[in-house]
Amino acid sequence: MTKKGKLLIFSAPSGSGKSTIVQALLKKDFKLEFSISATSRAPRGEEKHGQEYYFLSAEAFEQKIKEDAFLEWEEVYSGTHYGTLRSEVDRITSAGYNIVFDVDVVGGVNIKKEYGDEALSIFVQAPSIEELKKRLIGRNTDSEDKINQRLAKAEYELTFAPQFDAIVINDNLDNAVESAEKLLTSFLKQ
Image (tube, rainbow, N blue to C red; front, side, top):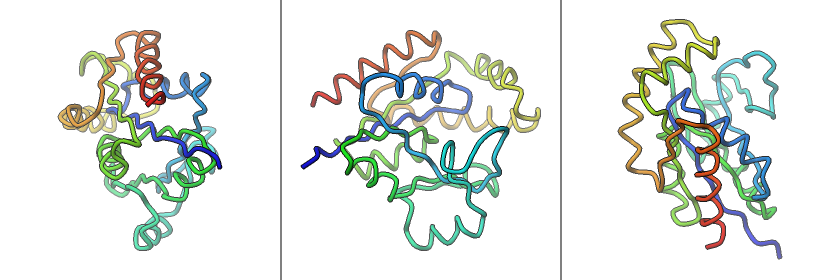
């Protein structure tokens, strides 16, 4: 019988670098598979259904909520939902892979509550709100209003950091990846 995989949760305010850290870890030998979230937002740029996200219509997303198909879900911005399908967790962990989540902070807290010791939750934090603003502007994907929305949300999300198993400050990407690797190595040996 295949040993069931564990859950690795990465959460952070938008622009903190969690997705970049997760992508670096997926290239390492941790037997990781990425949890693809569902969203009701439209694809950006080159994003494809079933790769970056499962893109669902608002109606389809609402139906899945009613069916209790989500491990966690959140209306992250007005009219824009994100969630983790239970089927995604089962598919990956039952195959013996460790599932890695790149989710908002509320989702990260909720997954940790549901899975307890089977999950390691890591909060990725930019060194400052000023640095976060610089990164969001540098991405060149959002309007000034959207950036201000994300910054206001980031200040709120920072209050959740103590509810995570560990905090990684992303002031230097290589150091942040190395810190995350050490945390994963220790957790996966348990």
